[in-house]
Each structure stands twice: as C-alpha cells, then as structure tokens.
Image (cartoon, rainbow, N blue to C red; front, side):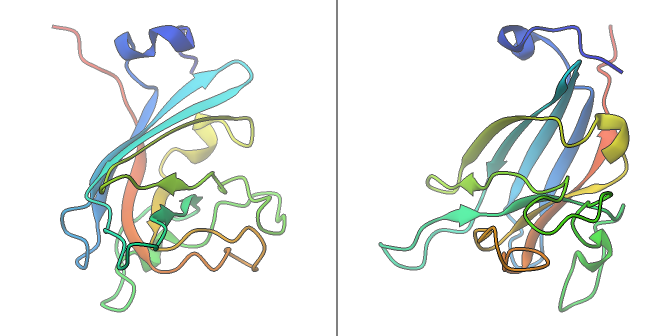
Length: 166
C-alpha cells in the first residue's frame, strides 16, 4: 500500500485508511475523521474533529490527547465506553511517550481541531483494525503508562479506505 500523491495534492487523493470517530455517550456530538496516507518513509496522519468539549473556564486549555490503541473495538462498559480499545499501540514495549501509537495532541478551537503529522512509528498495515482514541485531557508525556490523559471521549476503528470510481 502506497499513496502515489504528493503532500500538496492530498485534497485530490483518497486516504489509504480512515478512522471515523464517534463520541462517547457523554460526548454524543463529537465526530471526526483521521485519515492515513502511506508514504515511502512514513505515514501522514490527518485528523479533523468537530464537537470537542468546550473549556469549563475562560482560562482552561482545550487540549486533547490523541492515541492509536491496540484494540479493534469501540465498545466497553458504562464506566469506560471504549474499554475494548485496549492500551496504547506499543509493539516495542517502550515507555510512554515512545509508544508507536503516541501522537501529538489536538488543540481545540471552538470545538474544532485539525492536525497533520508525519510519522515513521508505524505503517498503515501495522494499525489497520486498531482504534484511534481522543482523551478528555492533554497527555503529560511522562506519566506511565498512558500520560494521565483522562477518559476516552471518542473512538474510531482504522479501516482500509478506497474511493469507488463511478
């Protein structure tokens, strides 16, 4: 799998994989997509999210942790609706924040966030069928095992994506 598009042409190219994000029962309006473009030297990940929780106070910082988790299901329990997403994707058993699934945070702007990052920590084939999780808090990049990132507020399963030609 290899996207033949240049980065500057991505708006005209379908992603190689996509996770369609859906909010938890506590965040039903949260939606978004995370697109994955396989390149020779890594993966371009492009996230676009709507309906993020608004800050509680005027000085609160709307920053949300974003991770790829090892599980393949966005199901769980009443206490943790995405419990079956499992832990962070970490095939090398590295300490946090060196997990392959650790990503930069989303910075909310009136409930909206956009992120593009290029990484060589995984290939698309490595993460197909796994989950993308948005957490309620920023990742502190030090607390083990998951950065004290708070509850899981959105989840999506990474699936192969091919636009059908008409």
